[in-house]
Length: 241
Image (cartoon, rainbow, N blue to C red; front, side, top):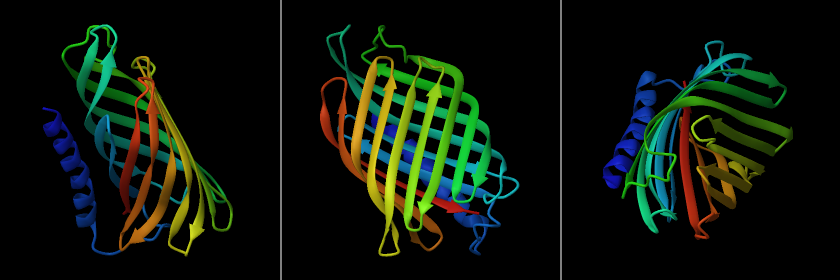
């Protein structure tokens, strides 16, 4: 079951890129683009996830104004249940539909969202003590921030908070332009839900362009509230249209 969920999520994530590629054969400049299609995978020893989605700014990505973010994701994970005294294997499927607004000032870009959060979690064995079981519908707020305080330097942050048992995540990153190819620097990330918490420290490469695609890669070390540690890796790709 876990393998099928991850494979299905990865297939959908790849489909977003394929669909985006077929929209137009001509490259689109940053000033005229209205869509960003994105997808990615995230792996560490206790979980594997994939996602795909889009951003739509009808007035253009280079302008302030209404922006819609739609995202689907899925994956598998495991954790230790104190109530059961054993390890629980879980699978999740989520969908988010988040209207928002883009604010711009110079090299600063801030996007703020709020909208629908739908989640499904399956646990084996079933864990009655878990707040994430079956179907849940809630409200999620999120933000994405990008700033270039000096030529060749970037600051990025993103985060989200859901009404579904107070699930939240946050990430911050610094980067410096390397060899004119991409930004490279450190990142820190945290995630928490239902009494579980995970902290990550690592390095990222952001904005590596190959044709019409723009890649981000990250790797580092993670530790969670079950005192488990291990390496993590993340790869994502986006395309403007």
